[in-house]
Image (cartoon, rainbow over all chains, first blue to last red; front, side):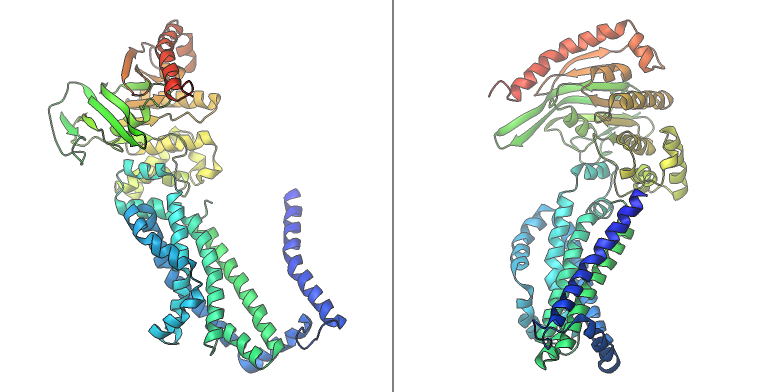
Length: 253
Length: 284
């Protein structure tokens, strides 16, 4: 009883926040205090979205952004995890990589876009690459801290059972730092979305970012809002999927 | 009988020398010095000690006397600064030891069953052998119902049983235990001590157990080694004559129990006070 009522309250509160936001927006928009041209009521956006699906191929833009995010995310996260594990397990690797990692970590990643365009052009490869670069060190540093915070006793246990270096790597360091890895991945996924939308602003052809920028340039404000809302929903769904994967991969946490 | 020498050679079975009669482990003039910011610290100072084949040896000493360091060197997890530790093994060139660590050493990411089977898996045992051994050991430590559980679902005492089963799974000739019951409440500790006694009486493995509890030492040991405060040396070795099989009641009702208890406490009291001095309590 108690647990189910708590669950109900949790669900209600989760839904309440966006509902309150949308209702407030709707009320202010309809009150006449603001110009509806720039602050259209959210209820009017649905029709816009339907028209966009029918006439402008909205799903194509979503698909483009989604593929770029997931592709770039994997391209950056998998090597990032590998490097992070190596940095956590071996101090020479850690000392060698640390200055580069922390320096690049501090650069706003979108500032690297011109460099990536010079090197790789403006195609899909460049877009995957900018996402991958953006998250690589973030994932590596989180993974490293996961390995470092792992109790050294676990490594002693493995060594006591005569585990090889590879077995310590795969059997202790990797599973032991999975919770920290997923913390890094969750941050990285957010970054991927930010960077891809920014990239699509700067070289607009397809994608949700391009849609927002195109709409803004021709003052199609409602279409711009649809783009924004889709970005938000995309981010939410991506994080939700990652949480689901975490629950399957890390059942012991 | 062959003897595998772990030190100073890197590999465990590197060298074969003549056996020092009957001893499973021969510790000869072993010292361990650690570097610290305030200069070298002698943790272990010239310890010589033999552990007999099938003996249950318990090492007691004040906190920080280097008991754990000594155990880690026997387990080949640490290297003596000088001296050597030799193992003699019947019928095999390799001495297989398994350690039960202090505190939370059970892998949280593996199920109970996978934890117990971990050493066997590394040793390349088949799934069938692993399953059979795991089932047997989990029955032995009373955790059959929890084979699919994760450690966080178990109590501290149950997790420690998993750690013991995991060490026993590789069928070690030498079982090393570092305060295996230190973190448990007294009642759970009593129960697990009795379980360990039963298991030992059945398997007769050579055991070296480290503890700070005199009570635990007398309950379990054939022989108790008392260590001095830092630097750690052997202060005395005392035989425990209680008959086996033992239980908490038989050990405590033995007329010699209180005599041995006082004898060991007399030896330890001085060391504990010294350890407090070294620890800075009076230096401040």
